[in-house]
Amino acid sequence: MSYDESHPAARRRTSRRTLTIALAALVPGAFAGWLIWQATGGSADGGPAGLPAPGASTSATAGAADRPASSGPEPRQSVSKSPSASASKSAPDDDAAPGDARPAPGDGPLAGRIVVIDPGHNPGNFKHTAEINKLVDIGTNRKECDTTGTAGNSGYTEAEFTADVSQRLRTLLRKEGATVKLTHENDRPWGPCVDERAEIGNKAGADAVISIHADGSAAGNRGFHVILPALVKSGGADTSKIVAPSRDLGERVAGKFVRATGSAPSNYLGGGTGLDVRDDLGGLNLSTVPKVFIECGNMRDTKDIALLTSAEWRQKAAQGMADGISSFLNR
Ligand code: ZN
Image 1 (cartoon, rainbow, N blue to C red):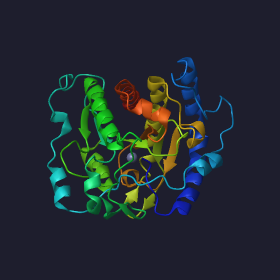
Image 2 (spheres, rainbow, N blue to C red):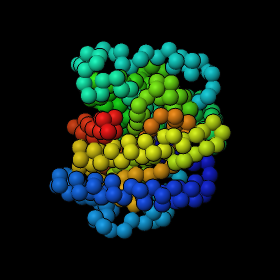
Image 3 (cartoon, rainbow, N blue to C red):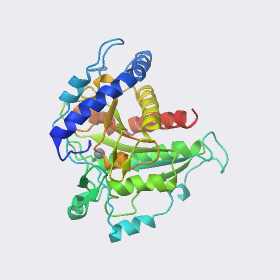
């Protein structure tokens, strides 16, 4: 689900400015994605609603204005030293988990590369409202530790979705030889908070981090988008070194996601680019390594939820992310 904002008006102003900059740089990438979409014959369930034709002007202002005023809460990180936070530190390295066929260390095109996958939210968050509502420092301000995430009308939750796709993605990246770590995986009752999610990627020395989500927007709003870190220098946040590589990572993930899934970029933000830039997400503000978020679709839209609940589609989604990350790491 897209992350909530404590001050919607302030955020909208910032988003509009940053989005304008992003579009100027990223429209060529979206254009390439559109061509890929055309080449693959489009998605099976409709078409690129809202996707501009090549050369069509994209209005950043319109894209930002179309964004719901408040799309609900999101992952919040915690600086707290609560028992749960401590427990997370003892979580096993996901790379050591059994059951995956993968090359021996040193094999594969991604050997020696570290990827951290952040499954958005935690299925247990709804039982721990006090803990996840605790405010944590995200550099620019303080936000909730984490949120419950959204859900489809049938009850399929975003946390369920992100856990599944994260595991699929891990398997794919390991087959390429990467060392992969998840920020959490059935090893804690709630969280981590958003600041801790960022810290896990930082401490791992990750070459790339992806935080996986699905949005909770209005019905009719469709498609995926990748969220890139804005330039932020405030408090403990300094994204100056990761803005450029994160944009590169995000563009590659968006392009490969289009090709793998056949899904169109968001028709409700990003001006058809499938890319957004935000300065209000602790998970990005506090990252010191290249990192992006991906909102894979809108769980509140009947056509999108049909895709999100399909295991076959989720595998394609994971493949698109793996291809994008691999492309970035082999650049
Ligand atoms: Zn989310």
